[in-house]
Image (cartoon, rainbow, N blue to C red):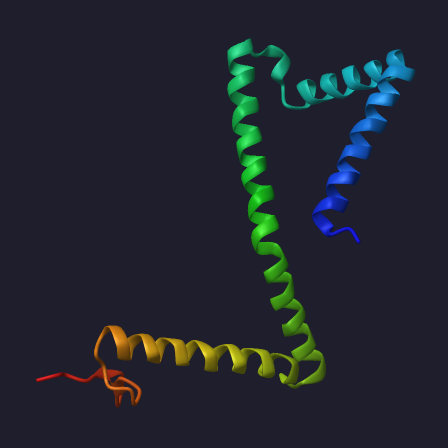
Length: 140
């Protein structure tokens, strides 16, 4: 059984092989299409009037910004969509049952880990560590 990484690698390799095959079978049509796309790119961004160095700088900055955008979207967008869908479910159903179970387990385990860390590393008392309105205990 293939995992998602192997499957996506196979899809990318298959796409590259199909493009290479298309370039070898129909070189004039494919090369003409690539030249047209390059021409459209240069005309759209007015790159045809820049020198080679200026084109390189512009393309480098554009590549950097697009790669940062893609990386940020792939890292943070799935979690953001999950949060939005949970909020929509809450607005639709009026209850946080699906949210409450998961978040309560996470909060309970996180608070237990923090309490244990405070007890072992900071020498704070095991009964919470904070008194009243967020005031810490003072050790004599």
